[in-house]
Image 1 (tube, rainbow, N blue to C red):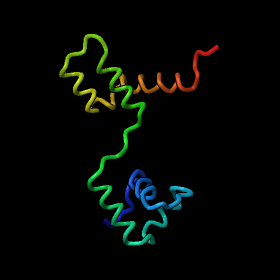
Image 2: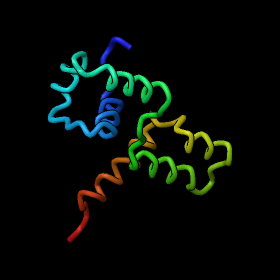
Image 3: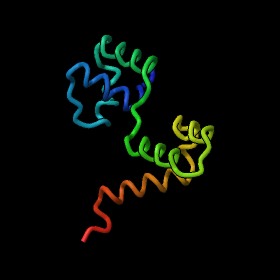
Image 4: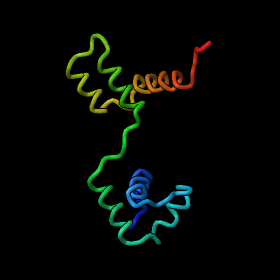
Length: 106
């Protein structure tokens, strides 16, 4: 791999190597100068692992999949993330964010 890997790969490799990332920008810029072992770890993470999924997205998928009147086939599509770009998911995520921000509290 000659290109700088995605941020999630760099973050995971840094965690496993006890490397401190002060800013992602500077870490990305210095990637070419990192030891070969670190770059190899990044390659393996990117090749064999999946990027982490935001808990809000997981909650949104499950909320929509378990809503009344949703068929099993449609539930499966929601849970697998096939519909992540639809307004329903985005609205659900926004509702979770509003809840976390304390919207509606007295």
